[in-house]
Image 1 (cartoon, rainbow, N blue to C red):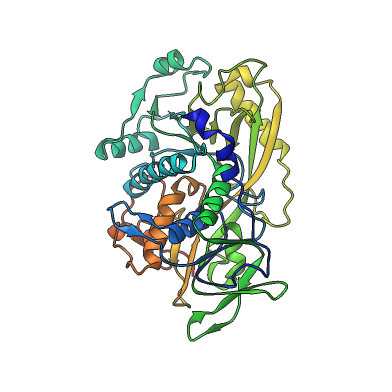
Image 2 (cartoon, rainbow, N blue to C red; image 1 turned 90 degrees about the vertical axis):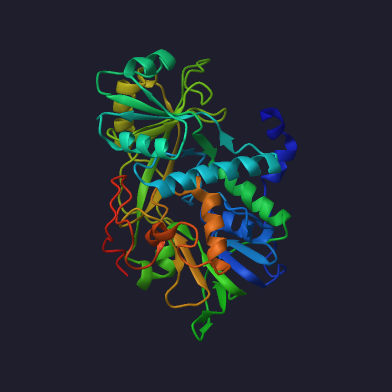
Length: 434
């Protein structure tokens, strides 16, 4: 129950404490660099073990070290901020749709096990300006996979959620009742804490690849010369991945500045709380949002590429133009919020691959190094499923063992399909520029 999940016990479980440098073990079977959605879940499942989607055992029976430069959920991380949408709609792409549903199953499982609130079951709305847009493609995929959804008219929308305005610009609305939002920063902390409870070693340090021999990496080292050796390594360093491997990934992943705003509803007005308002995506307008939580206003964010951004030294200050555009959108879609104050703001980043697919692959120059990145704005919700996939690959599963040719999208080299825009392109694209 929600009250139980919000208990003090749950709050304590969400606070991992890094081990003192020099006192924690300096060697492990698997060393994971990066405690975000990809790295944190992989480290946890590799350490604690679990059950895969086919019922087979995943991970366990090894020692794992998890290292992050600033700690899980820190404000520079792509997996930071407060909330993320979780939804199944991905156009005609069945793999991401299946992965999202599997991930939601895992989010809910561990939310119960860890007694900490991670999933906000708000549902999700997709505003469709065209009859044949991505929303229609998503609906067809949801039908094929048996996922519950509704196609709403503008009148349906206003009747059920009168706080949303329709000005003759919507053809229909796709509603996913089982979708919602995830508590992002809280989840990163909860995963790292669960990793520690399962016996994993968690340290805060800025590390880079160190010595190698015979096609195998031997260690990672920090700036003070401390090293962590391992049998296998996973680099899931988000926007820092191209810096760690510049020759391989310098042109493959683009890091851009993404502004996020939180608008405060009027005093006592609960219409924009997540319990009263589903998460929403407006592809044609280029905005998405999540209902207010107790601590924050309604989230509204432009879904367009920002300028190239330095994740380490870039100033985390939103652009005035982002505020202006958000207010223009609020006047059109949420008029009761048009003149309300922006009560919080965040600067996050996208790590976009050239085809918007994730990078989940072995390093071509090392037998024992795996790379995970290129979240491309939609990786967080898939976190536990990505962890399952990576642990299986690290354990020796070949490419395609779980999802066949669909897994070619994650490789280094020619990838299939060539884009992730819901068009269902099946021809091999040019791949990443490696």
